[in-house]
Image (cartoon, rainbow, N blue to C red; front, side):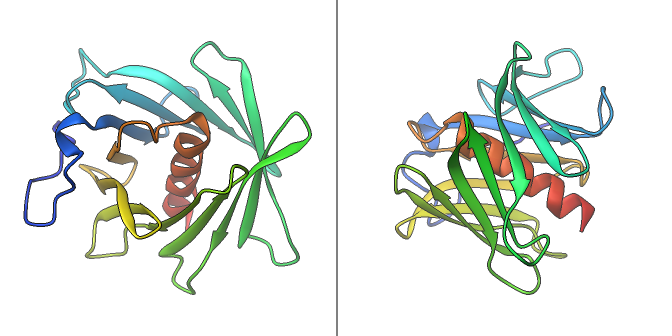
Length: 178
């Protein structure tokens, strides 16, 4: 399976040096989203990439575990209206806040504690793409496939923190369930 998007006009200049990831829902153990890194955007059954983190999905919270199984943080609902705003907490402090910005749940806003703000567009029916921008500049591109349980994406070098990877994996889970 090839995760790399096709080069076309408007392709970001950082793409040749991009860090490649994919998230997968539903493998073992159940109720998890796993994020893997891959050197060149290609994966196979014999070479699935390297596990980076895993989200353990629970009723009210989602635990974020690193490849060694150690907790990196917890995602929980926030606000009055269920399903519109989530926060990731680490050691009792908020690391980021993720909010749904459209009625169709296609647009999301990620506010990281360091002040960085991401805008994401998630897949929508015939549009199987995933994009992430910071200050209007493309920093993440990806797509769904070959099934809904897989998202493959490329991140601009230097942008691949555990916080951003966890947010993308969490959006994948929510999108898959909606």
